[in-house]
Each structure stands twice: as C-alpha cells, then as structure tokens.
Image (tube, rainbow, N blue to C red):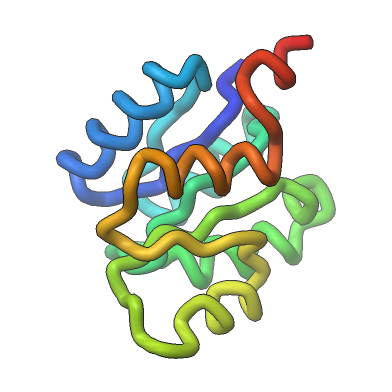
Length: 127
C-alpha cells in the first residue's frame, strides 16, 4: 500500500516529487486532480496527501474540504503545495483543513521535513 498520494496536475512536478519520494524510500501514487484524488482515497489507505492547491477539474481547496467532510478521510494529513506565496495563503490552506503548507518552488529538505513531521520517516512507517 502506498504511503503518499501526490495530487498534482503538472507532469513535470509529478515526476519531480515522485523521484524525490522514491529516493527517500516512500511509496506513492499520483492523481492529476482533486476528483481523481478523492476516488483513489476512497479505495486505498494512504498515510499522507501532497496536495497542489491550483488544479483544473477540482482544485486542492475543494478536495481538502471534501476529505475533511468524509469520516473515512478526515484524519489523513494533507500538505498544501502551492505556487501562491502571497501573505495569508498558508492560513487559507489551513482553514480548508491542510495540516502543513509548502510554497513552490520548494526544496527537497522542505518537502521531506513536512512529511517527516506528519508521518515520520519511511523506516518508522514500516516498523
């Protein structure tokens, strides 16, 4: 069972995050928008969601709100990934239910630190 669901519409960003997670020993799946993410979340037990906030079809704000409204999904940690680094964006993400926020462009260390804070390292997950 994958540890992390990557919800990202940009194929380059999908590959970048997937490469980073694989090198760090996390397992993952990819969903290209919030609607696909909700479908996948209903079928598998993920430990964490990396959620791009600006996507077509269903954005990350609406997908996170839907997760928080669903008793089966409400406790899955969500890390918001957004290119919108405007003042107050982190608070907007937290208001819809995100547990953490990482602004793009982000570093490998920022992503891994956020994941580690919420679910631990891959070694701790498999123990």
